[in-house]
Amino acid sequence: MQRKIIIIDDQNLFATGLKSLLEEIHNVIVTKIIPDGNDVVFKLNADEPHVLLLDLNLPHKNGLEILEEIRPIFPNLIIAILTMYSDENLAMMTKKLGANAYLNKDADLKELKHVIFDLKKEDFYLGNGIKTPINFDLLIDDKFSQINQLTTREKEIIRLIAEGKSSSDIAESLFISPATVQTHRKNIFYKLKINKVSELIKYAYQNNLI
Amino acid sequence: MQRKIIIIDDQNLFATGLKSLLEEIHNVIVTKIIPDGNDVVFKLNADEPHVLLLDLNLPHKNGLEILEEIRPIFPNLIIAILTMYSDENLAMMTKKLGANAYLNKDADLKELKHVIFDLKKEDFYLGNGIKTPINFDLLIDDKFSQINQLTTREKEIIRLIAEGKSSSDIAESLFISPATVQTHRKNIFYKLKINKVSELIKYAYQNNLI
DNA sequence: ATAAAAATACCACGTTTAGAGTATTGTATA
DNA sequence: TATACAATACTCTAAACGTGGTATTTTTAT
View 1: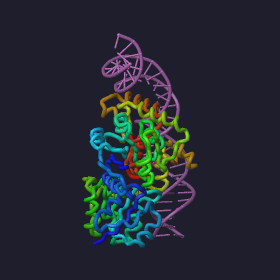
View 2: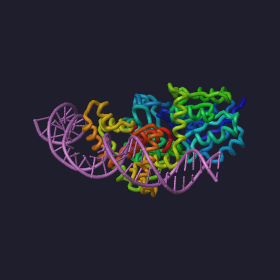
View 3: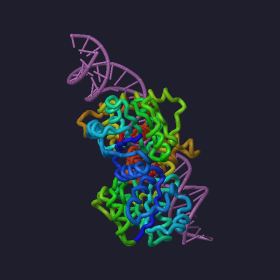
View 4: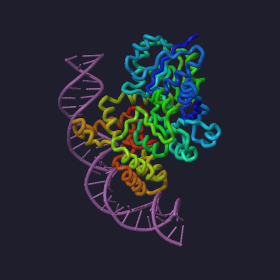
């Protein structure tokens, strides 16, 4: 049977290249490439695709948000995350949010074919490139809750720290007291179970906070 | 006339997708996809390609090193950098090393066609997605010399700092005195004209040092 | 309307950095 | 064989950070 696919990816060359590659497969058609998170529900409704290939790193609205938004609306849609991050924890997070597959952009065509033709809506396929974490479910909840525990203000401050600003710099630019920045810092460190700026920035980069 | 292309990119899906896309163009053939920096000279020699599409973010050996290595050996080859980084400074660096184009992976097919068919060996084409820096040549020399000024040990220490290690942690794992680590730290900061760990890590991420 | 969560702000203390020096040893290479 | 560069190591000082508290106000959600 024919499979209709939609790609959500902001890297034009990757998306069009992938489309070209997929359409070499018999019975596969890419009906749309969506470069950002705007009006995704509307665009999916129009095409009634079988499979959605979803990047995480999108401008403004990220893939996790999109996933969270569309999963309840399209319960039968096969949603495959297709990202450059081989992060097991991230993968488990997307599983929690209802994704059906997590693939690295380093994946091969065979894996994609498997995702497109074989997956059922209750399945979760983890790409070959991604190592399953040992502490599995524990880790999931941990990281998942970690990121959700961060408040807007805290994330804002993380970004400023990552830009290379000191506590007093941040205080100035947010018009708050340096002491407050210190408190936020303290809370961030506590929530993320870290204790150095360097770890914070590493965390921020690896978890797409920047 | 026919144009033979080689792609060096470790993201399999991107590379094969791009191949598929390019070969839809009349007279274009992708003769090889190279997933790492090993034996590039040998592999290029065998195919005699007209155009090389080179990613920067490769495992073990990075694109800059490959560029530096092959440019003198293949003076007539059109080398186009194709990367996810829209960093003007990085672009200027590759220009210095003899690249003929710098494209973002967000580029469109028109730009690629231009690169493949129109560029002469003395040209340098800067992709649409990349903003030209104001201080241009100044910046080039600056950043270029900056990165080359870093010694092996210094880069090693940057990586350890970025992993979240303190000076004493690093001292322990390298079997040197904390004072020495401090000295390296000082020199790194001086060379990069920065003064905070956060700036260092930002620099490291943005310049592909991690 | 009220409880919970987020954002604000302070004190106090010890640790770690960043910045400025100086200096010795080993290793290339011109 | 000089000379430069890299790697090593030290002192000292001031500033910034990390860690433990406590406490008030504002916002959000029930």
